[in-house]
Image 1 (spheres, rainbow, N blue to C red):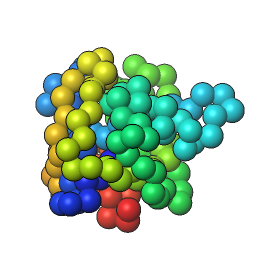
Image 2 (image 1 turned 90 degrees about the vertical axis):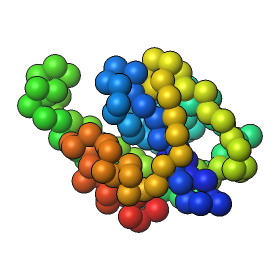
Image 3 (image 1 turned 45 degrees about the vertical axis):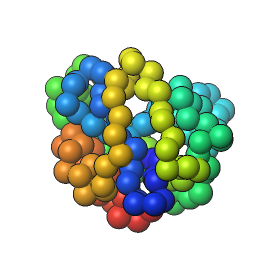
Length: 134
């Protein structure tokens, strides 16, 4: 997650496949890839942001699981996902991400509370856990 220090707002993105659904960037690990390296890669791919715009400052100490609802378990062929969370500080208040226009199509700075309330139900517990800690 990317936070803007001047007002503690998070950078949220609207999904391209489910308009009106907002979340934080996320992605998968490639074989043998370090989780922090994957976070940097996914952040660049999905938002266009890199070390000139943000700095990695913290990580949540544990993997955070979530289980898919039944219809997604069947569609995706798995039960859910495990996430490793990283906190990135925006180096300037005026950074402008460039969503990939595939997974994400829009962005906005939001409060932690707004994001917890707005994220899809099956991700909410994980968001609440991590966003209240980092």
